[in-house]
Image (cartoon, rainbow, N blue to C red; front, side):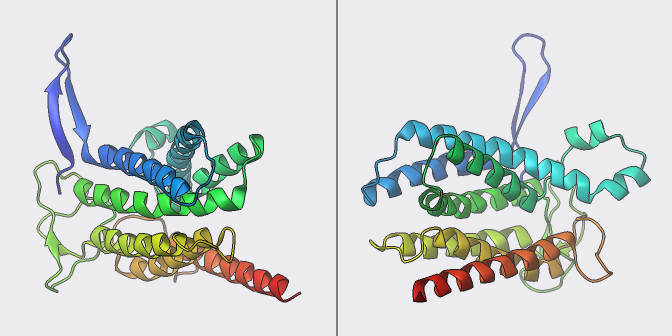
Length: 266
């Protein structure tokens, strides 16, 4: 881990400025994803204005960050109240929830597509690839920052997060590097989606996004069992909020696939 990439003094007043690895990797992920969207559109000979990609990607990024922060505050609200923190402090501090980011990105995405009359299923498939690739960068950012860590373990995969700038991860404990597990899964899912995209005749418009949602939801449900970072209280004493969302998404995608198959038979 390496939470802070570098520090430098402000040229005017000498204030120390820190550049954090998490933010840099998130930005790199979205830039790489936007370039991928453009390249894939050309491969499929789709007439997509590159300015549309820039604007839509920017809106998706802004809405995803806002959604991730809002969802984090909502999930952690009981702890915020118990510790006497103000909402302003909670919103300006660290902490993001991935599913909140997905929800925010989807809201911004649908708004833009409806406003400018874009083909939502086609763009959803393109942005499924962006999400999968961006997630690789994002979870690497989590690893560098030390957040989203796993439970203590004595297995060979366990890592000790002992960087001097570490203010998040428990020190002196070997932990499951769940950030790397998720980055590896996201990379494999991205490769699968890219292979499916290269098919010239997609059978289901919007199907790539459905595959990404289903794949990630199933993986996230499982990896939550070995997560150790604060993620809100257990619901019904059994499941984390992210596991509940994962179950809802799996059911939703299953219904979507079922309805699509029924339409195909009629």
